Length: 134
Image (cartoon, rainbow, N blue to C red; front, top):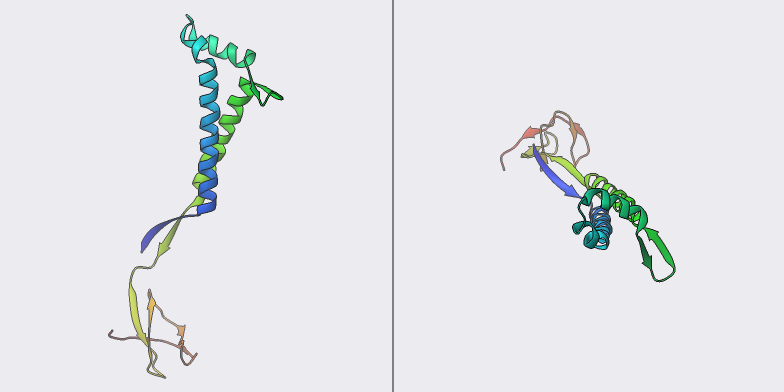
């Protein structure tokens, strides 16, 4: 048996889009606070205080605090990873193809795996097929 990885492309693209949006939101937060964080004596506490104080303005109408942007980025990254995991699917493909022959109509057909009792595709009878040479 052979295992094949199959990706559902729309879900895969949506997961990549969510991951990119999440990374951009986090990078925007770092870009907005980088000048004050790198010049301070305690960068971690300065960064945490700036998340609650600093605001980002979108089109002069909507303002967000940076903590909301960090939360949005985290949520988008988590959703992107979850959708990426759900978009992948492992399928088991039978590996060996065998040529069978119907004992009644004597016609041959190819199928995968071991067959004990099958319907002949030509005469549509329930038969025990014989393994035939190719």
